[in-house]
Amino acid sequence: MNFFREILLEQLPGFREFPSIVQTFLPMLLGCLVCLALVALFPLIAVWLERKVSAHMQDRLGPMRVGGWHGWAQTIADGVKLLTKEDIIPKGADKLLFKLAPLVVFVGGFAAFVVLPFSDQFIVSDLNIGILYVVAISSLGVVGVIMAGWASNNKYALFGGMRAAAQIVSYEIPTVLAILTVVIPVGSLSMQEIVKAQAGGVLNWFIFQPVTFFAFFIFYIGTLAEVNRTPFDIPEAESELVAGYHTEYSGMRFAFFFLAEYANMFLVSAIAVTLFLGGWHGPWLPGPVWFIFKSMCLVFLQMWLRWTLPRLRVDQLMYVSWKVLLPIAFVLVLAAGTIALITEGPA
Image: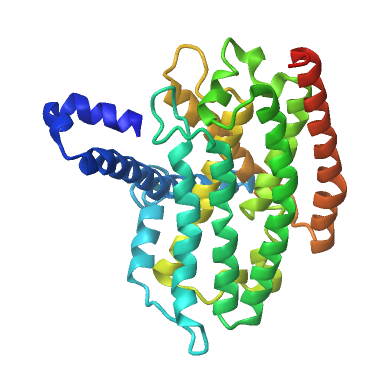
């Protein structure tokens, strides 16, 4: 909370005299509100952007009317529509789990934003185990998806939930191994330390190093699977499972799944930027601008792939994870460890 604590110290001269519990929780609350605003507002932009990207790739225009310029307010109108829709819970559903599932999925993505380093100062909490925290807390989304599939009492939702569990657990392994190829040379799990290790110019970014260059692509493919983006969107394959694990959801409960998906798109892109693309480092522009710009480029790439590639079959999806990405990731980790031993020498 150092960043927000410093802001409060500057803006509130008497902040040091506040009770210790207030000094602890007020910066935390301020940081959470900023993260919540980002998680809530980004999907509005991302949904509109995806509509325009898909439209232009298909020789269409996409939204053009609501709000004026290129239909910029169409997503806001859709959000209002979802707010006014009736909230329906199936008669045979497990009502408690059915209600909790969207919140668990949303919280899993929201909580990970607190360790994203937008600049050398702008970070909610610089945990010394930042990347480990992200890997752990993002797994909550899997729990929420399984809860949604099971609680819906619907065979299509259950199939979607089981597919999601198998897919995400499978792709987490090569993804974490790809992260290790960065952690080993840096010697720290802190997101800030990982970014600082890439200072000194573009060629110092890990994507331009021999081992981590290949690790970046494994990480990016793995994150596509973890956020259920095409070609890894079989948990909600509409041609097979209606809508997968959220088939029975309507109104704002469905919107929570939607918000979580687009928030996670930015989250995994931001983590990729932190690990491989130099984080906030860049010439001329402020650090947060570079960080957001790089992240949005990777988000655009996710949208590009969605409207370009066909969906994989289940067997193909598992083959890619276990027989392609995992062996390569193991080799890269061994290579990263060997290079670290050679360059650093014996302790």
